[in-house]
Image 1 (cartoon, rainbow, N blue to C red):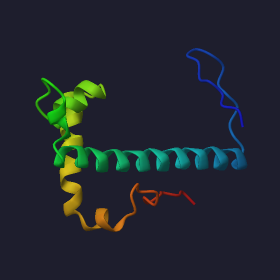
Image 2 (image 1 turned 135 degrees about the horizontal axis):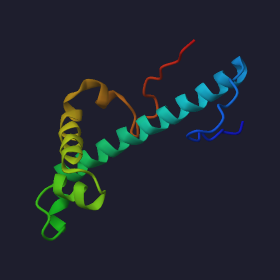
Image 3 (image 1 turned 180 degrees about the horizontal axis):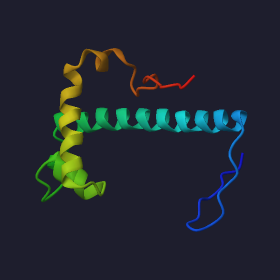
Length: 111
């Protein structure tokens, strides 16, 4: 299936038939699952980076939040939230039960 770019002021693309809509929906679900898996892995390794004091090896960086903001181009608020969640993950029973990285995060299927 070819994606149709949406252009402002251009002609409306033709509506999808059911099979094409289901196929596109499945691709969206697969991408969402891949993003969730990658986010889970990121949070787990951020947590390890934090707990093991890795930021101490980076001159002039004061914290894991500071390092994430600098090295990953995250807004400071986003970096703070990542570290907050990474710190909390070990206390959440489900996080301990999932394999690392987390390939089996729940998927929403509209059927």
